[in-house]
Length: 190
Image (tube, helix red, strand yellow):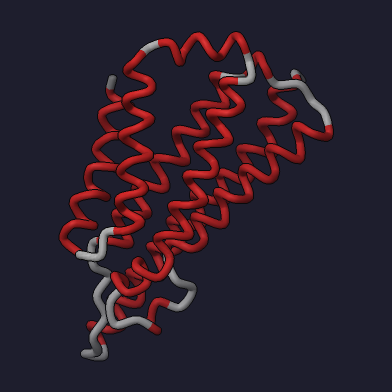
């Protein structure tokens, strides 16, 4: 087993649990929606929380893919394992907050979105900063950042995330989250 395989086992386990948490949250929200329809109560999933979930999932996939990019730079050490555990744990926390544990406590999940969006997006920005710091601290990885497109896409990502943290309108939030999702889809297809 290589150093990368050893470390990646921990990383992939925690990121996999983050993915499960997002999908479980969506499942709970759908179950609550179906139950509300049956009992003629009001409950709306809305657009914001599902869009945030899609964005977090795409962002998570980008970090999973990034792990492959840095595989030659990974060495097993206590510091590496603690960094990987902290990094992936922050992702789990962000994923955990996307959907409420008890969606039936909300008439509309857009309310939940506006309560948690800043926490989630700050966590993702911290992770982005940590990733950039790691890349820029390794001479082999710095070469990828010489291309202006990489910096441009990174600034677009960070700018849209910051905008999503402060926009108060549902419509504007939908547009920004849709742009964040579209940015990842375009990057993945390039």
